[in-house]
Image 1 (cartoon, rainbow, N blue to C red):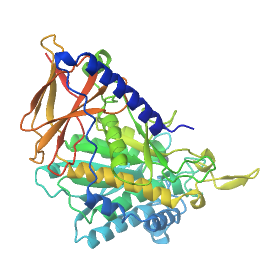
Image 2: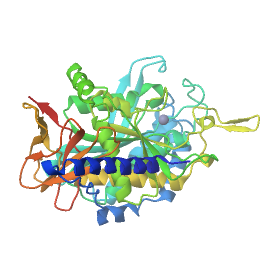
Image 3: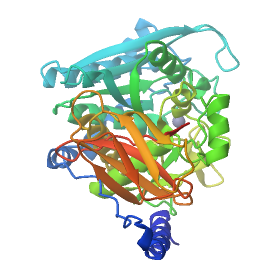
Image 4: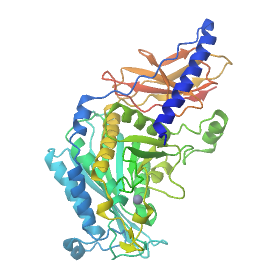
Length: 468
Ligand SMILES: [Zn+2]
């Protein structure tokens, strides 16, 4: 079977040849030589941190989460159940104590917080229920850049065959003990480092009842005007040990047309072919670059759709509020092991049990997440107000932007790719200016502009808006 990466590689080579052909043809008119994109750098400090991510720690954390019996959002959270270590309340308190332990280990560098609210009855919530998201904030070290936030999340609630069952076992080892463990392990390891921008390590509840926790959190981020650049949602990253699993790959789902697009945005997307250039899609491409720069042990396979068929996840809550957010999920899910009571029927084992989880795989996915978070939190802010001039009909392309706020950028890169290409293919450095004219027709390619610092950390790219 040909893997996605190999397919993209072949496609990229094909496009490059086409581009070179075009360049050769029109060379007399001064078309710039297509430049292969400068790769995302490998920062040795980040690479060293990735080595600290431990499959044993992840295993211990998933085992602890499973030990609470059920983590159904509507299960017990009274003091007696918490003391007995049973139900979602006990899970919540343990996650909080774990974040607090990491905070103590880094001299109070993490601020541990909860976002608690009462959800009124809905189809899957029979009576008013308190839902609590637990999170830790690693504040950026640079006063201006600390306002920029990147976030990793997993949902700590679980379910079995019946979403309304509050007492039966619902181990949720993979869905989503694995994603919760990724968020925790990223917090433990990255809290030992310093970044100019802020990283939030989040665990939410209510996912299985209707994305309630993430919905509340994303709304709070929107209402409070957070500069939330990227959200990584890990949900079912346990690498279920089924025969056809591919443990070298993790899927990264991203929306194409943004859920929060206005009518004006949609008109522009339709007119200019912007269906594959949402903020979430740029984040997915960024993860692909990070996956090539660092040896996480697992490669991201970009899936250009919001989610699996008729399935949903917490990244969508963030997309709805206009934030770039993607979903990580193992290559092949075993549906006998999701949303099922633990049992054996006709020789088939059902249930989301510990023995199906591959802890080494979860650790590799955690490394890819940590590398992405650390790269983004080290990078300058993206350039502001990126425009492409369209007043005159011309075959050159002029792009303008505002300097990256926060003072970290030392130069910029204009990226471009064929409209039919999945990933950025070429780049042109721009130093000491916030405007460039390229001998390339905007009608034939898609452009983006990103900020670069002295060490080579790159921001997310921004696709230009036409300026008349
Ligand atoms: Zn899930």
